[in-house]
Image (spheres, rainbow, N blue to C red):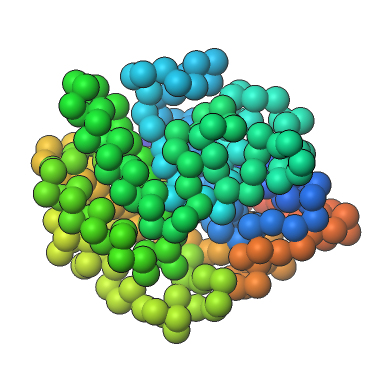
Length: 283
């Protein structure tokens, strides 16, 4: 369990990540906001509590690795990296602009702290399995963390990777499924339902739990429990809300890729300022 102070610190950090997502996307006017906002709490817990990393040495061989297979959530990853000290926050406002090192989708050759290029949905799952196998062959005790989208998990490659991870007993692979229930075309259940996703991953040989993806303590506890696994990979299904934290976006498929002008930016940031105020007041 987290201390009261640490829980507040991580919740505030998640809110800061959300603010940077909004400001970053507003700087260019359009971007993948919904699925970026929904994973901010997870990123706060990973980068500011759980992951063994060194922002001054992003390629440190003994680091933990993160593969965000839903690579369009790059603005969330970039915001977390900037806040963690991988690069100056001013770089965020170059998102998806000419000659940027922050392209719309994650690119390991451009951005400090990005461990794997992603964006072709499903492929990050296979990459994470390969990284986990490679680190084990090198005798590393590093963890590989994988973030998947729920719409992305309609891809067959995700399930091939899931079979391989279980077959290879990759106990140092911990995955998260951002179950925000929406994809670009609408409800996941209406486009191509995943059914009982917890039962599915269990049937594929994974330790699997579902937690509130916006509760930093629940996330911390689930990751700590996953680290006790001896012979299975772990899947933590996150019950999340697309567009979390911004009233105009919450639960809307239209925020998958949305326009943010100056007026809307102010409205979004006002929502997040209110959340920060409530957190600090213990509400």
